[in-house]
Length: 616
Ligand code: M6R
Image (cartoon, rainbow, N blue to C red):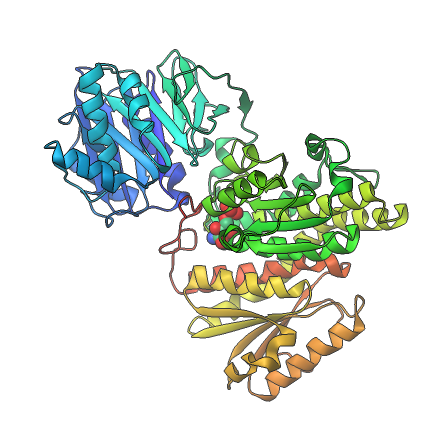
């Protein structure tokens, strides 16, 4: 959702801001704007509904002054529609200061009433303008931007990242955060603020993540961090593990195509350093302290969307290997059902961005209730790992396309590493079993590369199916979450009604949907894992085929039993059954991408969606 950039230094701020906003586009937005202070000390603002290109067209048609201090914003509308007026920045102090904001100011109505009563007027429908007007008043009262800002953020309720700059104090940008991300980029004679490191990674890879309820002030030569009471706070810098080219398309038709091609590498990087000579160890889990994992008696996985389906896959493996009961809950349902949590409950959150508000709130709830929290996350410096007792990072590299692909396989990999680590700690697997499982996992990157090759048959199929009104997906055991993920991908990218079902559920209702020509993808389990499950799924295929379904089977190489009944078969390499989901998902990701492309849709930024959902 909203993207934020702040800059102070020696470059043209406008250029830095527009470059940063471009890199933050992937977060999803529907309007964009910038504010810069020119050398004469005048604040200039430009903002426009629509894509970033609408803003750059506007700047070309009506150039504004430029300087070396500025803030920029991409907005995903919450309070008020995506219009020019509602776009950020919003102004206060009679146009002398500018404010941008991500999140929701929950007490904005009460604050607005107070300001209206005091004679203030508003142009937009946003909650953000309330903060800007309030800041203007505090600035006039104190004459000090930092002090005024501190007073304002202390009055705001809800979740926010907020940045401000004032023309009377050029060379200063202030920012604050609560439950919403803000990262500092440390430069040489220049400093940056961003929603995430992508905002400034082309200028610096040295970064600092701001903690909860903290305020940062940047000038070209200094960075000061305090809490909301004004007490100074020590911060730790880190090096961003990837460079700007990692978040560029690099010749691919879309970020999604590039990211799918990177899946073998994403899994290999997630395994690296955690399996040595067949021995599995996830050192980050040491942060939990001695004996904690051995004493866990229940695991609850919390996540949303694709990450939740990764959790569903992980459940089968973690439970089987460690013999600890595992549940999976959608983050936004978790805390409202008042789950029973104890100090021996482990809550594992999964989040690519590490900023999904629903998941963040689930983690906070779990910790407040005394549970232990481990985060599986792909983004350095993100909020969720910082709010957890330990973080297991996936090393998938930046994922820019809104549809999650390489992060999904990296999340499953991290959960499998966790499951094997737990099994070793608890002694629930023999050395031979652990070695067999680690061998399987380390073989996955090469098998993923083969699967990508085998999935070439998908493109013509997707083109052929571009006019489908609905597509169904069936799977059993670990194939079930893959069916759900296949359906989600198709919905979000191709805007086609798609549903995933557990194959065993078919005769309990969904089979009524089958009519002549209905496309159904079936994820077929390996007969080597469970001959019984395999036989049942093959029977399901016959049942739907008999009713006119067009069946596309994802089955392991050499599975002759499906051939007579499937219209198409996508063959995936042989893998132990628990590892098949890592391979079976690939053709489904490619299918959704190719079908969306065949319909002429934006594969990387589907309508209405944001990459990271930072409001509840
Ligand atoms: O950043 P997160 O992993 O927490 O995001 C969770 C979901 O919003 C995300 O997986 C979403 O479902 C994707 N758009 C799916 O492709």
